[in-house]
Length: 548
Image (cartoon, rainbow, N blue to C red; front, side, top):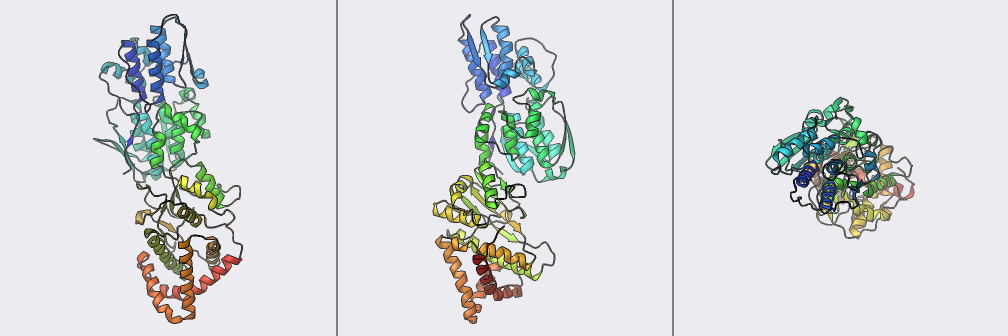
C-alpha cells in the first residue's frame, strides 16, 4: 500500500465555522500556513473587520476566493450596513461578483434568514449551524476526489487519512460514483478510507456514464478527465454553474487548461497532463500539501510513441521533451513496445537510478530458432546486469524498464550524446556513476517488463549493430572492462576451441538463472555462433551509420 495521504481540512466546513464565530462574537479559530488559502483569506478578512472603526474606508482583498466573497457580501449587509467597505480580488473573482449561489444562501442561513434551498452545501450549512460550536473539522472530500481520479487512471491503493463514511460533505458521493462507474473500491477503516482498484477500470472502456453535476459541481473536473483517460463517454448535465467557478471549467477541461483554477490544476496533473510550476501555485487555494504528496507517489511511464517525435529529432529528443514536462520526483521509463510490469509503485528508496529487470518472450507458442537464441542470450545479459548492479559495479541498464530521479536525468542530459541514435540508457548510467549518484536495483518478478525478440535476421543484426555502435563512446571503467572481457573470452574460444568447455558451463548457468526451461542444445548453439555474431555486430556497429 502507498503511504497514507493526509488531506486538507474541509474549507467549506472551516469557512462556515469562521463566519459563525464572527456572527456570535466568539474567538476566531487559529489558522496556519498548511491550511487552504481560502480559509486563511476569510479568517484574515474577518479579523480585520473585528478591528474596524465605523466610517473609515476599508478594502478587503479576497484573491480568487468565491466563498469569502459570498459570505462577506451578506455579512457586510447584515452587520456593517452602509459602511465604506470594499470587497475586491483577482480579475476572475470580480467577474463572479453579484451572482447569488448556494454560498450566498448559506451565509443568509447563518445570519438567521431562512432560504428555500436543499442543495448539498446548504444542507451542510444547516448541520454546521445545528452542531455549532461542537462541529468537527473533517478532511476534505472534494480534495479526495483527485486521488480517486489518480487511482482510477493509474491503479494501485491509497489510504486517505481521516475520511469517514458519515461525512456531512456533499462530495462524499465521489466514493459511490467511482465505485459504480470506474471500479475504485472504498473501504473505511479506523485510519480513514482505503481506495483501490485491481484493474477493473478497464472494464468500463467504451461505455458511457450519465451524471448530473448540479449538486456536486466541484467533482466535474476529476470525473470528466477520468472518463477521458479511460475512454469512457461522459454525458454531463447540471453544468450551467461551472462557467462561474474559478474558471469556466467546461472550457478548461475541454482545452486541458489550468486558468488559475486549483481544481483544474490537480485534475490535469492526476490525468498526466503537464502543469507548469507557475500554474501549480493556485493549488494552495484548497490543498497546499498536494504537490509534495503527488510528487512522492507519482509515477510517469514515459513512452516515446508516434506523435511525441513529431519534430523528427529522434528518441532522445522525444524523451527530453517528456521528462522536462514531467512533474514527478521519479520517472519510470519504458519503450513503447514492452509489456509493462505488474507493479505500479516505486518502493521508498534513496536511490537516484534504479535498474529493473527485463524478460524476453516470443509472441508465438512455437518460437523460431532465431527467437530462442535471442531469448537465451537476453537471459544471460539480464543476469549479468543484475549481478553487477547488486555488487555496486553496474555495467548495463535498459531504458525499456528504468526508474530515474527526474533531477538526476536533467543533470546528466548533457552527457547523453544526442548525435548517437542509441544509448540514452547506458550513457545515463555512465553519467550517473561519474557524478556520484546512487545506483539501485529491484530484481523482482512484479517489476519485470516483457520485451519481444526480433523476427528476422535483418532486424536482429540491425538492432545489434545499433547497440554495438555506441561502444567506442563508453568511458566508464566497469563498462569498458566488462566489454573487453566478453570480447576476449569469445576470441579465446575461436583461437583455442578447448576454451569453449570452460566458458559454456558459466554462461549456461547465467541463462538458466533467468530462463530455467532453456534447452541445452539452444544454449550450446548460441555459444558456438556467438563469437561470429559478436564480431559482425561490432564491425557493423562501428563502421556503419545506424539510425532509429
